[in-house]
Length: 359
Image 1: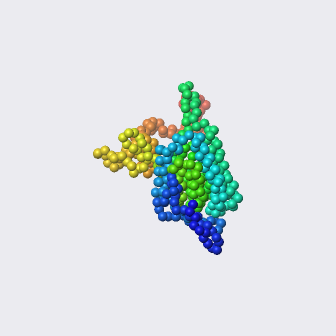
Image 2: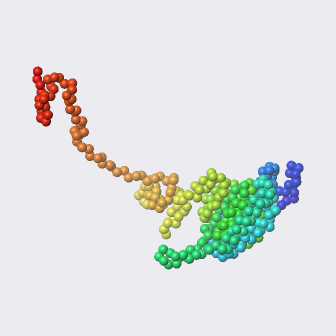
Image 3: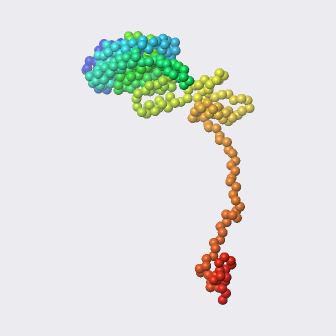
């Protein structure tokens, strides 16, 4: 940690924490010259300055994590050895408890007692707990299959994890995401809130001291565009987010969008409507669109911007109506009341024709 001499700010002696590099598989210079000025919420005075990660830095972090997962020793390492490294990471954080508490109190604005117990103490307990779980957890079991034979079930890591942490409990939430992911054999790209990026540099130093291989952990502080690019990145296999409900819904929508699929050995089908198959000769633009949408429907790839296929219009036959005369209302039979006296039915009226009285 590069610390300049103490500066005099507003008549108070204050130490300004500055960093010039990013931790992407190791200490590397940033791709851009943008910086993040960190202010204390208690005094509203500057307390630090760190580089702001760009889109290129996120790509480099994901590439380092992907390389460490695909070709590195971390996923294939024995789970008991990974549990030991996770436990050493918690001990390295405990050894820097005073520095962690000072930084968290300065950038979060919390009381130092709460920073010591509620942040540093709980975070070290999380790493110690998962280290103990990893030593006694059954990573490979044998069960009885549906046909009566033995079936071997092996727990494998999911891949590259993008972890996005909030500003209010930075170290504790980072521990909740890092400990299980590292124990499972995943590699992690940790995205920091721009309000509290200082304490994670101490976390990077503790990770190097614990013995994490290069590329297993990368730390990128930045704005919302950096988080969105990390969520959209094709090299990330899982996203772990803690924050507001609105941002969580947006991340869920981004994760639900179709990803590139390899369907068959001849072509690659993409969920992007811009990547469409070239039409055959003699087919117009409309036929190409309808055919492309039909192929997407067959592959169950949702495409909100594509035009849906036209439904088949079949001529419906109307039900055959009976003859029109059958629907005519029959006239009501004349009533006997109100008739003239000469048309009243006689005493012999009954089953046959009525007998009329004539005057």
